[in-house]
Image (cartoon, rainbow, N blue to C red; front, side, top):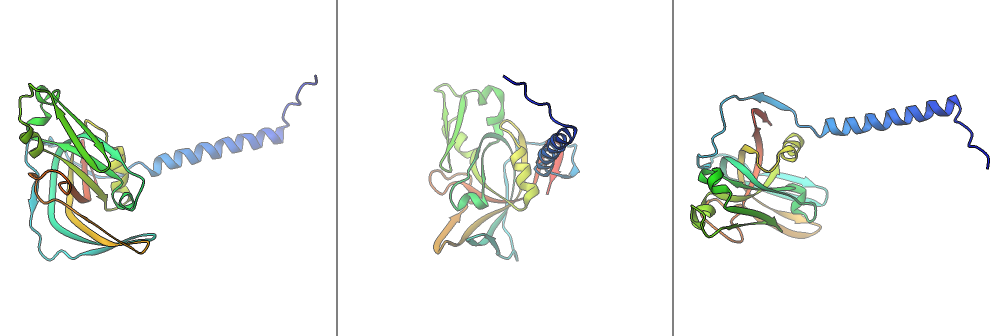
Length: 223
């Protein structure tokens, strides 16, 4: 058996260049997907406060087009929430995933206290979230339902999308944006999606559909 011929200097140079290009491409992809913060805030986040929802005036609907998906977005209320991410789910299939790729299950109030959170388990599937609690949980199921929610998150831009991607379960975050309804066409089929506007409802239609314009994660704020 003959020994393989060692690569020539020219071949070695080509190999080195290919490796550099590959590493540069990977580094560029990582950099592009890293959100850019616009400011910092040192005051501590307060996930014990209730979500803030305000009526809006003179906020016009706007269009959102993504390929064959053509939507009209109707803001219904200005919305702000500070809460802990207790479950996170990425969706990739269906028209809804094009505008709201992430669902966050959020909890606030006493639910984030360690002596209470250890009794509760959260899960997400098919755009719903579920919770189960042990029989000796210190708070009622009604309290859990009123202080947790499943949120369909519509990033206003790529930087917000990258910030959502960066967030992990267990993080305490603050979101600003609008509760919205959407309606339109997808491949000649009518589609629509409506947000809940109360924290006290349950079941189908009880999730918040949030057009997210600003996020705080730790001390960094993203727009």
